[in-house]
Length: 213
Image 1 (cartoon, one colour):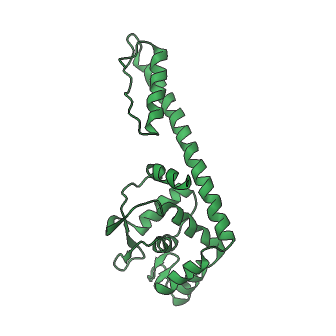
Image 2: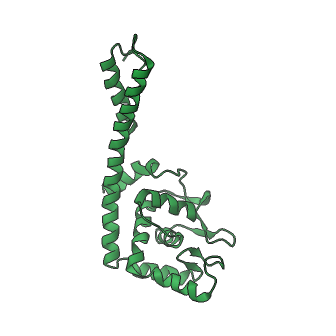
Image 3: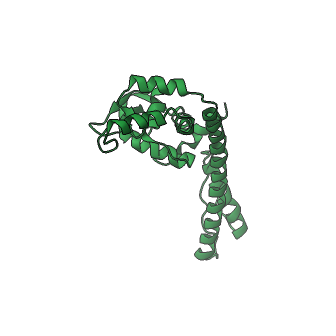
C-alpha cells in the first residue's frame, strides 16, 4: 500500500497498524497526508494508541482474572499444601521472605512462624499465582543471573496485581522443576529460567497460549 492521501485514510491505517502489534503481523506506519498539519496527525496517533492499549489491557485483565480465580479456588481447597510442605522440608533455610537471614528473621521463632504462614491457605494463593506465571517460561541449563527471585516476584506481582512473597515464588519455581541457587547470604535465589523481560505484558503471548489449553 502506498502513502495515504486523506485524513480518513490515515486514521483507518493508523488504527490498523496499532491493531497488528498485538498479533505481530507486519504493517507499515502511515505517513502524514499532504496538506494536513502535524498537530492533527499527532492527535490521531494518540487516539489510536489509546484505543490499542485499552484493548490490550482488556486482554491482559481477562487472562489475569481467569488465572486469579483459579489460584484462589485452589488455595481455598488447600490444593498444593502437601507440595509446599514437602519443599519446605527439603529446604529448611527457606521461609516466607526467602532464605533465612538475620535481617528478615532476627530470631528462630520468627523464622519458624514465617514457614508456618506458607502452609496457611490464605498464603497459598501466592504459590498458585507464581506457578501460573512461571510454568509458561522456558527453563535453561544455566542459571539466569540477570534476575533474582526477588525480581521475578515483582514481575508476577505486576501481572497478578497481588502481593507475592519471595519465598512463595521460590517454592513455586522448585515445584515446577526449576533449579535454585542461593545468592550469597541474601534471601534471594538464582533460577534457571530463560527469560529476559521485566514487563509482564511482554509475556502475554506465552500466557495466552497457556491459559487457552
